[in-house]
Length: 500
Image (cartoon, rainbow, N blue to C red):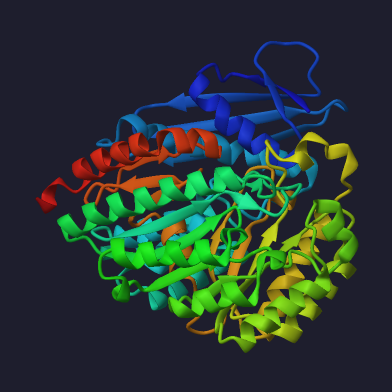
């Protein structure tokens, strides 16, 4: 969809306009001079310093016009990015209102296009706003529906029950350990994940670098007296490596990291059932790791084949039951709404199968066409459900989780997500993942170790975020892990200088 935007010359406003357009149309293209555009939208902006007023008008091909306007007061002390943010939000409000009227599609998330809506809720809460005022702000300034505001409220409440000291954890860190190998690569995946077969040399070299990073980061944490809140082994699929390699890795963790016995949660993704064995579960038990993920994604065999997951539905159930028999008492499972060829009936079947297992937590993802995935590159091959069906599937997930005693405890959103919906983590009482809360709400530094691991350094006082990523391919990582470790420690030294 090509849209001619008139009256907005400042390039700083182009991105929010594009993001709002993408909520309604696939692959929106904005143009700023007259030409062959399907729609024309004109804006009129009046800025008197402490008051911004924006009017908008859309002219459809049939000659019909759609109009909207919005005024916002701007405190005199606001300037720079803070002031610009209010102007952008006002413009987005007008544009969204016009496009909702034109298309008849109501965006329940309003003008919020970011990944972490609950982070904004926490920010306003920490600034001292009351629950009532926060809800009013989301409704009147961001155009959120009552349903989404209520969802955020539930999640924030649950998070503060799970991590009562959430607001004061910036002087601790969490650790993400990336292991970039899988049995095969799924069609929707953009994580660093390489088929492990035939790569044993790369695996051995990679693990040598990973052990080095763990030792050096652990030494730094011990010297500074900084505790670890959570550790998360992700990837890839961390259980792709052998039981012996897993054993050595967890031994390194216990020897290198400070006060491992005080770490609140250690999670190992065992997402691919075809990587789970009795020997590997024995190793997890040996090191007192009982939070794992076993991810069916779907209980429809044809779907698994279509997306490149080379395991059977029966194998998922068998490995889940094996993990249960061997004492795993905190298992997460993932389901994905909108997988190719699946509609409401198929998703309901997956929910019914999940009810037979009752994992401690269930994350319901909505399929997102990520730019680098095989599924996006070959979009024509994959038939997915309509926006209306996707929304109904999410409604069914909400009803199912409520009926089975699960409550939402974290959410995040993605670009190009079907139906402009969200991914929501649900958990039974007391089984929420602390790491998921920490990574989503950005209240503390998360140090990424391993191939493709992204570090997110958060200043303990200003909360300013600095990003740093290790290379995604094993060869580059193997060639430079010492350098990347040194660079992270330099950032940590600056970040925690007050600990000297």
